[in-house]
Amino acid sequence: MKKEKTFFTLILSIVGITALFVVVLAVTFRYMGLQSAESKANLAAHIVQESLTSHMITGSSDYQNELLKQIDTLEGMKRTWVIRSEALNRQYGRGIYPQDPVDDIDRAVLREGKAIENVSGSLFSDTLYRLTIPYIAPEKGKIDCLSCHDSKAGVVLGAVSIEMEINDLKVTGLIAVAVAIIVLMTLTYYLLKTIRRFIASYKETLDAVALTMEKAEGGDYTHRIEPSETLDGYNAAMWTNAVMEKLDSTLTESGKKMGSLIRLDQQNSDPLYTLQMGVHQLYEVERFRTEIEKDQNLEEVYARIIALLRTRWNLSNFNILELNPLDKTTHIVHTEKTLLCDAISGCRADRTSGMVDSTQCEVACPKMIDPDAHYVCQSYPIVDDLDIVVSLVTYEIREVGAIRLGLEQLGNYINASKLQIINKKLQQTVRIDPLTQLYNRAYLEELTKLIVAQSTRTMIPYGILMIDMDQFHLINQSYGSVVGDEVIKAMAHTIHENLRQGDILIRYGGDTLAVILYDYEADEVNEVADTIRNAFKKKIRINTYAILKTVSIGISLFPAQTPDMLEGIEYAKRALLEAKHQGGNASLVYDSKLMPV
View 1 (cartoon, rainbow, N blue to C red):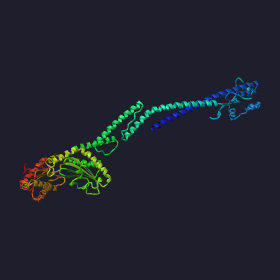
View 2 (view 1 turned 90 degrees about the horizontal axis):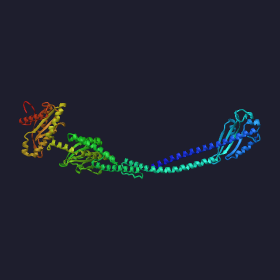
View 3 (view 1 turned 60 degrees about the horizontal axis):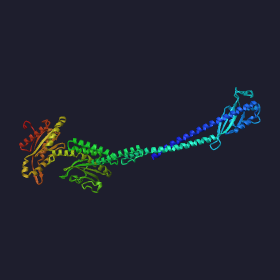
View 4 (view 1 turned 180 degrees about the horizontal axis):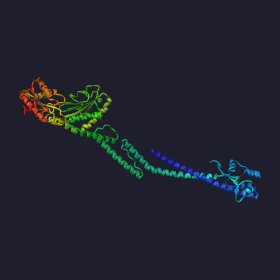
C-alpha cells in the first residue's frame, strides 16, 4: 500500500509538470500567433494609410473603395474599412461612401489617438484579430497634411480598421500543443515505467526491511526478506536476514537458558525483553547473595528475606518456618501477623517439597485453621536437615496470583544463596548446644568480644552468673545419664523463665550454665540470682521421677570489677566454686580479697 501511494504521488508530480509545460507551450504559441497577426495587420493598415494619402494628393479619392476591396481579397483578411473624423466630415462633407465609426473601438481610437487591437471568438468558432490605428496629422513629413486639412498637428484625422481571421494560427497552435502533449505523454509513460522498475527494486527491499524491523520491534525475529533482483537489494536482503537469523537463534537460546536459571517477574513473547529482564533479575539476585555473605548469622538472613517480601512484592501477611525433615521438628522463624495453621505438627508444603495453593483444591492443607482464608505455601529445600517454608495468607482471591509469583521469585534469591544459608546454619549449629538448644561456650567467647567492644562506647553494666547444680553426679549415678540430660534441660527451662528478654542463657559445660544479664546494676544482679536459686526449691519432674536439687551461683560484675569480659567469667567461676565450698544452695559475688583467682 505504501509503495503504491508513493508511486501515485510520483505520477501526479510528473503529470502536473507536464500540464504546466503544455500550458506554457499553448500560451507561447498564442503569443507568437498574435504577434504575427499584429505585424500583418499593421503592415496592411499602413499600406492603406499611405495609399489613401497618396491618392488624396492626386485627387483620385475614388480609388479608396477599390483599394479596400483588393486588400479584403488577401488571404486571411476579413474586412478593411476607413473611418473619418468629424472634423473632416465638416470640412469636406460625408462623401459618396460614408466612413463613420463602426463600433466603440473606432470611436475610442478617434477620441484617444491610440491604436487598439482586439481578439474575438472561441475555440470552436472563428477567431478574429482586429486592429484599428489612428491617422494623425503630422507636424512635419513628406506630405504636409495640414496644407489640405483644416486642422492642427497631432489631431486625429481618421483611422484604419482591419479584421483578420487567425483560425490557421489557432489550428497550428492546437496541433503543435497536441503533438507536444503526445510526445510528452509518451516520454512520461516510458520515464515512469523506467522509474517504477528502478524504484521498485529498492522500494520492495526497503519495505521488506521495514516490515522485518517492525516485527522485530514486536518481538518476532523469525521474519525474513525475499532477495531482490538488483545487486544492492540482494545484498541488503542477505545481510538483514543474516543479522535477524543470528538475533533469533541467540535470543531464543539465551531465553531458554535464562528460563532454566531464573523465574521471571513477567512473561513476554519478546525474547530480547526476556533476556533483559532476566539479566536485571540475575543482577538483583546476585546482589542479594553478596549481601547475605556479609550477614553474621542466620537471623540476619531471615531478616533480609522478610524485608524482601515486604518491599519487593508488597506482601504483608506471611510466616516463615524452619523445618528439619530428619527429626520432623518445626521452628517458627517469623510471624508477620497471625499464624493461621498448625505447622508445628508438620507441614504439607515441606512434605511435598513444592507449593500448596488453596485455590487449586478445596482442602489443600488440613492444617489451615481459618477456612475462609486463601493461602499459598512454598517449601525451599536447603540441605538434608533444613527446609525453609514461607506461608502467605489472604482473604482476597484476586491476590493469590501475585502471591504465587512472589513465592516463585523468592525461590530465585534463596536458591542462589543456598551455600551462604548453609554456612550460616553450620555456624549456628556450632554455637548451639544440641541437648538444650541454648548457645554454647564457643558462642559465649564470641559474645564477650562484642560486649567488650561495645562497652567502650556505651558503658552498659552487665552481670555474669555461673550456675551449677549441687551434687549433680548423684543423679547420673541414681537414675542414669538419660534422666540426667532431662534434668539439665529442665534446669535450663527453669532459669530461662526467670530472665528478661535481653538476657542470654548459655550452657557452659556439663550441668554448668552461664547467664549474661544485660544492663543490670549490682543489686539487681543479686536479686536475679536469688530468684533463680529460690526457683529450685520445688521438685523437678522427669517422667515418673520427682527430683529436688538446689543450685549454687557465682556472680561477677562487668565492667565494674574488670574491663575484660573473659576475666569477669573467671571471677564468676571462682565465686561459684566458693559457694559450693560453703555447702551449696548459695549465691556469692566475687571478692578479690576472699577469692583470689
